[in-house]
Each structure stands twice: as C-alpha cells, then as structure tokens.
Length: 213
Image 1 (cartoon, rainbow, N blue to C red):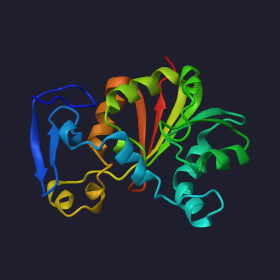
Image 2 (cartoon, one colour):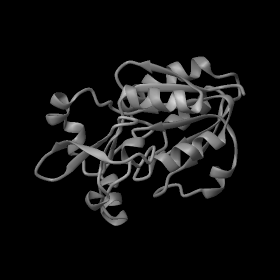
Image 3 (cartoon, rainbow, N blue to C red):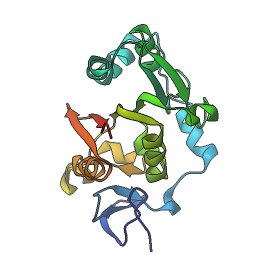
Image 4 (cartoon, helix red, strand yellow):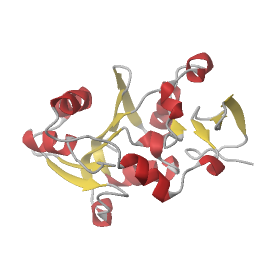
C-alpha cells in the first residue's frame, strides 16, 4: 500500500491513468503523485535536465522568473538572506535577487550539491519549477521549515492541479520527471498544519510566510 509522499497518509485513490503511469491522490492533503515504480533513476532524470537551456542572460527566462521575483522582492527586507533550492545548472533567480541587494546560497542535488547550504537558516527559500520533481516532498518541506526563520518566506513556482478533467489532458503530467502535483488545496493544508500564511499569485506562483512564533 502506497503512502502519500507529502503527508504520509494512506490509502491513496486512483486519480488518473494513462499509457505510461498511474497517478494517485491523497485524500488528506490532495497531492497527486506517481508511485515509486514509475520514478526514473538518477542518471535518466539528470539526462533530461541536461537538455534544459536556461541561462541568466536569456531575457525570456528572466521574464518568466520575474513572476516570482517581483512579488517576493516586494516582501523582503533589504539585505535578506536566502536559498535557491533546485537552482539548476544556470542559476538565474539567485542573480536577480542578488542584483536587488540580497544574499543567496545555492543548492541543487545534481548541479550544486552544496550540502553545507542546508545547515543554515534563511529569510527566504525559493524553488522554481522544482517541487513537482521531488520524490520525497514531505522530507524536503520539513527541511525547508527548519531552515526558514520566523517571518520568512517560501517562494514557489509550479503548475497547479485543478480537476480530473483538466488533468487528463494536462501537458505538465507528461514530463516523466514530474512526479508530485500540488493544488491550492494542498498548499492550504500545509499552511494550516505548519502555521503559514499562503498567497496565490497568478496561476503558478505561491508565496507562504512562516509565523513569527
């Protein structure tokens, strides 16, 4: 029997099935995930990421990231410290934040395996197009909470599950590196459980503020 990789609840119900994978939904937190048997091994996963062409000098990529950068930067105090988690081979959001006067550490399991960055505390943590790739999102979420200072922000970009009909034709699920699919209900569950204040900005930007106590 599979447990939810985010909140550990079980059993999970079948949400959707296509020719390649089954997608299971948690009845507690609403996360839609694929079973471990459908996960790629590390080499196959990285080979797909190596095809990505995201560069700091690309104005289109910067414009894409500005959907998180602009609202997050408005909320940060000057000279805040942060962590860009899952920054990829061409860290760009971190540069944008540094250009705005903040200090940003990098971590990526494949490209910036800087484990020491995970032992610090931060005013903010960002993860753009990352959480849908996590095999163990619950463990990473708890790690973030421990690293985040009271009053700090988690800034995320990820496409959100809307309903089963939309999911059945959703291109986002077809990427075999996408294994954890969040909805607004999922983030509201996490916010209530972990005393966070969630904001949904546009269709794929989520900012959560940690309580002061």
